Image (cartoon, rainbow, N blue to C red):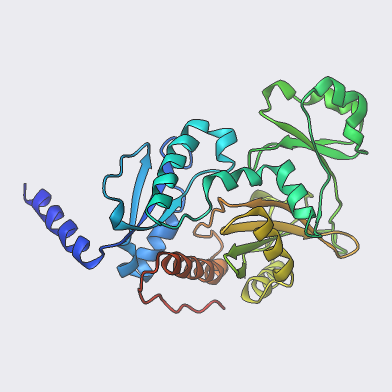
Length: 328
């Protein structure tokens, strides 16, 4: 009884101190803890702002729209294509927000622009190289024509991030691809981005509205650069720190691509081809920023989280003093 009374009093005090809140929605059965690291970081570095974030799981019933200053649908892209029932819940909330002049970060319809075959075309339209991407609707027909691609290429999902890839060196190898288990398969041109040192690099750039922040750099011996095959030594650590401590040299071009895609906040993954041209692999409006297992990367995480918090507060027009944290 005492704890319940204490909680009620705390909520009343918070409602007085923070009459406006930031509404967050997540999906309970998929990526249900998305951005928990961010919320924890805010609680540690800016406790006053932590009280502003109000989290709900879909579906949810909102009765008092006057209390909200910003809407954050923290939902996996592309939403409509992968989770149509969740899309419908979120869209209804978004409509209500617009009726009450509540800004929305990354409107849910825009999340469809992260479909890889769609995104590649949009990004290419602003003059950035992307891999040629061919949707596969009829696998047997594709096996005959290869969609106009030359080998090697790889097969992956059009919708899912981090999905299994099937590297195809010869057309006969397509017989080993389980097309029947793929939601929306695509064939993707293979672009060799191996550096002169024999290593592959994948850069991550965070676009937080007009601000651009370099994220951690991955270096790998494998063409498919993943955290699990990251090369970590003194040289790659120094290269990583140099990248995320400075300004991304492709800032202007990547901002053009962000605007063309229609996202307020997102991350780009990119590499360089043999001629030194940037190759963007994909956009990610559901960018995960976690507490790094590599301690030297914490200044990068701090820099990104600080910018993201400031962005949310500015869009919500809420005045809270944000932390000043060294990024180097």
